[in-house]
Amino acid sequence: MVSFFDYAIEILPEMLSGAWVTLQLSVVCITVGIFFGMILGVARVYSSKFIYWIVTAYVEFLRGTPCLLQLFFIYYGLGDMGLLLKPILAAGIALGINTSVYQAEYFRGAIQSIKPGQMVAARSMGLSKWKSIRYVILPQALRLVIPSSSNEIIYMFKYTSVAFAVGVPELLAQADLTGAMNFRYFESYVVAAIIYTIMVFAVAKIMSTIEKKVTIPGLQLAQ
Amino acid sequence: MEILRILISELPQFAKGTLVALEVLAGLLIVGLVLGLAIALAEIFGNTLIKFLATTLRKFLWAIPQLVLLFLVFYLPFDLNRMLAAIIALGLCSSAFQSQIFRGAILSIQSGQLEAAKAMGLSKPKIIFYIVIPQMIRLSIGPWTNEFSSELKDTSLAYVVGVVEIMRNAKYIIAYTYGNTAAVYLFVGILYFTLTRIGTSFFYRLEERLWVPGFEKRSG
Image (cartoon, rainbow over all chains, first blue to last red; front, side):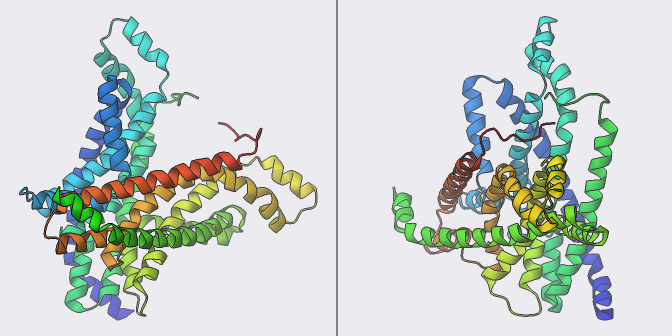
């Protein structure tokens, strides 16, 4: 037990540098995911039939394939065709795309749960379609989407660990590295698991705080 | 089309990989189901200590990324078959999610039913087996289908500990056919997509089949 703690403290600097990369990677992916998720979600509700079908096919196909595969497609597949991206960039793009299609579904759900009468009312007040979306629908949808969206954020935070498979030096990769250098794999992974757990609990706490801060009292989902 | 010829000649290889992936999937879903159900029942019907232990276990399993748990189990101080390690690790992660599904389903059963069963003189285990579980199964198939499809995709994570499933097979095929990386991965994508679709449509049908006419979820 004592030797484990000594070892944990010895490898802590490397692990924390990995945790820092994990944090940066997830901030990028999650931001990209929410931004594109919102656009895709709006497109699935309010766009023309043609765009609707394209967006739906895109979202459904990506939701039906593993994240690891998308990452390999972007890193190895595009690399093979001459577009070689840096591992961290490939991971950011792949994970961002992956999380954006899940976010899109949550945004779609939130937008559709707002009573259609609101859109009709906004249009009859003379607002353009875009302005009705921007000023009437989205401010409500963004609040309604937070519980499901924050689940996806936490999920994606944990899922950044797949970036290890293309050699991004994030927390899991650092655990692998220190494990290999000292031949103490199991203990390295225990340290990684502890750091991940602390970070995930912290992210969950932050999300629930945000959720409480932005709720509008009395606003509920349409039943 | 050179690539089509390669893909067709490699179909048996993909089929083997798919079978392995399905084995991992079946194994991890069973591990997750048994442990998830145990956690859910413990959290609802257990005494204070059991409740606390079950909740703590669920929270930790929920917070640890699948890959980390996968490596932890793989590098346990005793030797474990790769496949078994993948099944146990992914199953443990799945149990945290499945327990939430079962817990939600059980809590949506009207409490009057439990009181009525108690008043009829049924013991606690009998209430669980004859009243709670039959309804819980029907109520949880829907959300469970989501978990099924996300775990089907997560079987690809077993790749990292060297289980020769679909992704690992794809990698081999790319290596010995020199290149075609993007095309092979695109094909693998279509394969996963098809598997997910077949699986979910099966469970949708099962849900309809098992539904008791007139039996409704408590709304709101």
